[in-house]
Length: 219
Image (tube, rainbow, N blue to C red; front, side, top):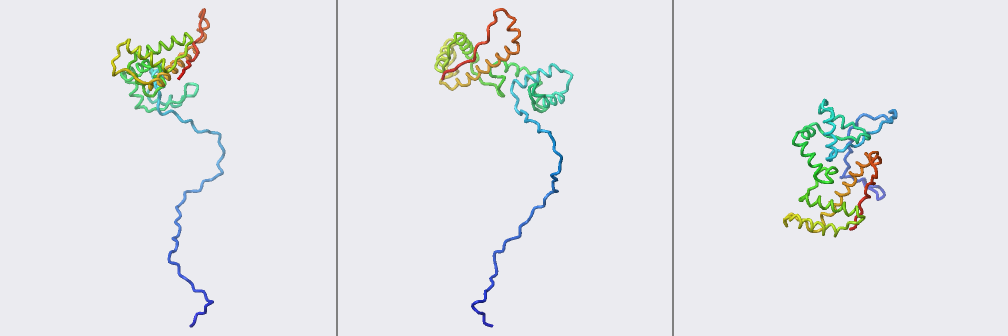
């Protein structure tokens, strides 16, 4: 039988598309749930600062009858007015409550001006030099003088020479200035908070002087 030119020839597809596989879905969630005013809990701090741990230790000393799980629970549910929530495990608390660990925390809190705000202690190779430098900055503030970076470098060199600091322990350059300024600012904030808490005592003292103004730095 002859095929006319007007007749269309049907072609067979070789690359047929595979059927789509549908993943099984779970039960349908209803949108008719009643509304609620409940809000998700705020994110709690995972890494505690030294100041946080000192607060925990003070609370433990003030409540010797509480067990460690009760202390952990209290710190987790602490309100914002009490300082906010602190999250840590009972194992971590047990390590911090060891006599040597408690002594190390309290010594670290008094070692550097910014130790309370840090999660790790700021390393100071010569605490005696740093204390002398801080006292000099305080004296300059009382005089109304502004301390600059080059002034800090020159004064540190003089203090190191006066204390006969070995050459390998002396700090050269200006890389330490930023950390030192931060430490001084934190120290000033701590002093200001203490004065604010005891401001009623300040006004009762005859001829009481107001706290010094905040530090002003010049690069």
